[in-house]
Image (cartoon, rainbow, N blue to C red; front, side, top):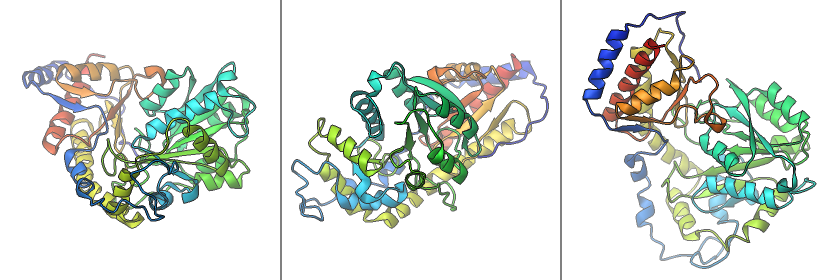
Length: 419
């Protein structure tokens, strides 16, 4: 991720900014940049899943995919995603469509059952806290709020979370049981964790013996450039550091095939996988193996997934390029805003003048451009600087996206002129 330079100050003509905004209101726009959804053309790329012949409903090992069982998921599907998720196939679990559901269930299992290496259930602790790199993913924070887990913000750097802060907090406070991480093309900053960051996460000493890294590798194969950025192998790093049970790895095909009908994955150490499956067996007799079989037959192998993701890139890259061009043209060379230039993932982070993000979002909403609420990128919806806005360019068509980003720039200029 990189940001554009800013000048020391920018004089804004308030009357002109107000006139531009009035003209924007007259257009009665109805545009939405709130969530990182694939657009219909991306979903069409996986259309073969709808016509896949399943008259032969047997998996490679002879499993009848119409029937109960197979809690860990089809071995051939786990093999396909083993490399991209950096988890050995026999330590990977393939479930139904939602990795968020797997994160939810993992927290529930930790609250109700003793984790490997733990002294007691999390629900028996006086307090439980998580470290939350910011800006971060609002749905991670929502899970913590749902279960009364205290959230402690940690600043993000260009190499991932500030590891001096992480190590000090995790090493000194036994209440801290976990940290949320989106290690590649982070939501929403676009940062990819450096090898040094991964190594320190694996090696650091923690006050809680059952400290876990929730490694949400949502964008493992979601490159926007021809150069495919890689992140260090966390599971191996943890094992090498004598903390083999520290990492929980999550991923899914939600932005690879069908967002609402894909496959989600959980990966970890053998002890953690045994623990997870033991408790998952109380909730389900097995995943949708026919859907998993469809994915195997359409994607075929890891190279097939890479080729599929290259087609996604062809559709997504022009949108991110468009956002960059418009922001540069409308706000470049000013001190009104900086923004990320991601090499992958689904988001652009726009940072406006301190104290102005909520007003920008309000103005945009009144003009018919829906944005993710200001503050959503921080725990409890509170951005202390009130400066960060997440832009999700993936869903609109190019014409609508251009209208939305131009309108957003108008709102930035007006909000800052009122400061």
